Amino acid sequence: FSKDDVLVVFVLGGPGAGKGTQCAKLVKDFGFVHLSAGDLLRAEQAREGSQYGELIKKCIKDGEIVPQEVTVALLKNAITSNYNSSNKKFLVDGFPRKMDQAITFEEEIVPSTMTLFFDCPEKIMLERLLQRGKTSGRIDDNIESIQKRFKTFVETSVPVVEYFEKQNKVVKVSCNQPVDEVYQHVTEAIKDKIS
Ligand code: UP5
Ligand code: MG
Image (cartoon, rainbow, N blue to C red; front, side, top):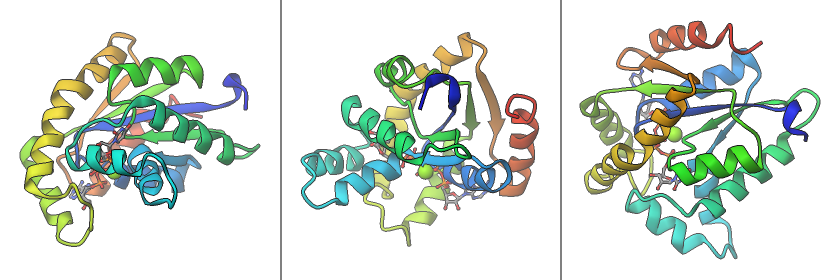
């Protein structure tokens, strides 16, 4: 793919804000390809023979950011293998969550068109994650991991949102409402930006 021919929207927000949920709806209505960095990392972690399996597992459990080389490579592969004449718009969910990743991705893959940022009070995110943890099987949906994820989000990922804000590329959506109400705001926010 050439840089001019793909469109990337970053989807950011705290743990449990609803990124994955909203992305699934955008895929249906706007024909995006949804790439969740977390899902790609979990798949790589589970892949037999992966040299990064243990590293990824530890980072996810501790709410820490996996070294960018691993994640950027997984995303690059995923964009390359999903790209075709009818798949040119990508939602990159849960990435970049550290400054170095943001710079590398935009330099080496493609500059983002915009960032969709889901703003959600921590208390609500905590409730959602604990609820999901009853059935998700995710090794980071427990109170200890969740607290660490929140800390990393505030210290490491919020600065990335601020960086894109300075470039006027962020659309902020409050997601402390029912799924369909949030989605209403999402579609309003992006419709004039994405054809
Ligand atoms: N829910 C959603 N929306 C709701 C609403 N409006 N009202 C009521 N309930 C709502 O939603 C979470 C839960 O809330 C679900 O049960 C949902 O039904 C409900 P979801 O859509 O899954 O939220 P999401 O924001 O996607 O939450 P997720 O847990 O996936 O966020 P994280 O950002 O924590 O997880 P991610 O998978 O992106 O990353 C996991 C880990 O991978 C990171 O902590 C990190 O260790 C690692 N990682 C990296 O190292 N590098 C990366 O680049 C990316 C990840
Ligand atoms: Mg998610």
